[in-house]
Length: 508
Image (cartoon, rainbow, N blue to C red; front, side):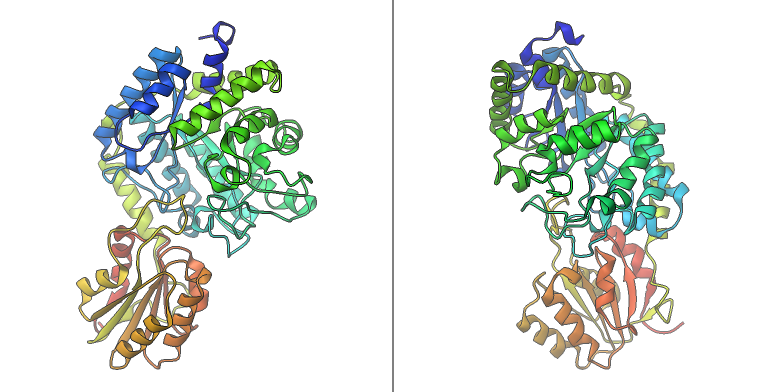
């Protein structure tokens, strides 16, 4: 359908993305499609149970949305790998970005992105919300961490370029995120409104550098994050809603001519401080092309009505609406087609690559004195209860690290809460008294004082100690230098299984 043949309602429908809470389209979602012509979908893990189910779901969504709107939909998801993965368990799921970069093999990063893109397209998903181009320059960042390719612009550029090439070679639309950079913050924008206080010179050298480089290499879409950056927008407006950031910097100064999308407006950074409906209108005025309201049908409806009212009264010029729609339609024409060939997803070759790549990323730190950790006859295992470090991640993991290790090696296991209490520390120290070794698994412990105190207390024991970082590897800086240290990058059974080989009951 051509833009000149579209009604205002059809145009606005093309500018929104929403989702639904189960493995099939809800009546509330279908009502948005039929009444308001909403043209795009985002899928999460709760929508997906298997490759076959996903393929059938996306076919249904394509049929329903194209029949009602005259245009094929974007069906998008966040498939970053590792801690942020939506693909079903029978697909080939890659490691987190920081784990990929840590393996030091750019070609493997390219292959990982290409395989991911090919699988998504084969299952009916034409838009992957990746790669993350944030620089994890603030180790206390609760949102980014292992989702970033590294702590410097050079690292992020080196591996981000390869990921981009892989997605483009797979023929899938991808989006670099979270512009202009969410790395140097200490707040999660799902829960609060973060601020990046870097000056313009530092922004150019650090946060903006990966976006600038990948834009020059054909990055087709950019996700704008909910961050306040005073050096770009002195009025304390989140970049998502800032014309200076979106149009002035990204569109004009950086000469980006692709698709500009919002992070989800239901995140607290927008919902609590501005309101979703107002945020949608302000975001489009600022220069966004595609608005994500990822979960709640009523919120999407309210926002679409607010945008329609703003367009009808001239608050949002029709020229701006048409410009946004043209960017959406151009991206759909280039990247929208899907093959629906389940035989091209989760193939033995893809699964083998993902398995070997994950194994390549999990190994002891070079600083560990020995390549293997000897547990002895009476080991103690301590694990933090699995849980969501950030709302970008999926839900709880299936098994506590302590119980996993006990099941494989015997000994005793103790589970602790993420906010380890003094009572839990006392219990761990009491249990450790007569043990041959202690192995502790932390979950972003560098951000949790209780976990840090637990490590310090265990360090004071004259017992051989191993420390596994179950997400951010920065945890390993909090344990004694003499400890055996291993980074898993993700709190999953598959990662624990790969780490298991580095633990032995007795010396060979």
